[in-house]
Image (cartoon, rainbow, N blue to C red):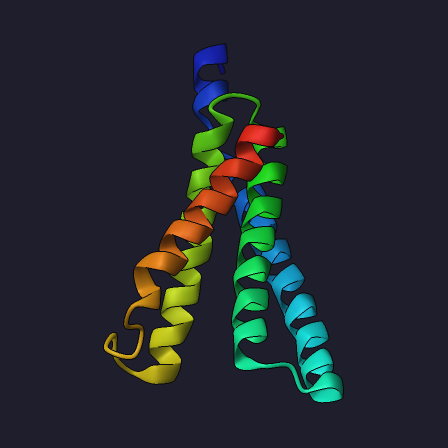
Length: 125
């Protein structure tokens, strides 16, 4: 196999592992937030901000790890990971809610935050 083909091979398994670890990080952070909500009775505004921070942190992590592995066009790989994270989030939301109408205003904002977090992670890797 020549060098050109080796550079074009995308380690799909690695990308899936990065995405899985970002969702594990999300689950852990959401569990911590649920505990804090239970213990301290956090307001809806605080919970919304915490969820946004968790999304950005998880996609940043996925983009950072992927950027380290890929070595070139890191920001694009991070953007891809943020986009994949959002697509999985969207699919789960659609399965739970059953329609797109419930996504409302947060749809575009969440997409930009996930993609931006992943791209930032890739750029800083």
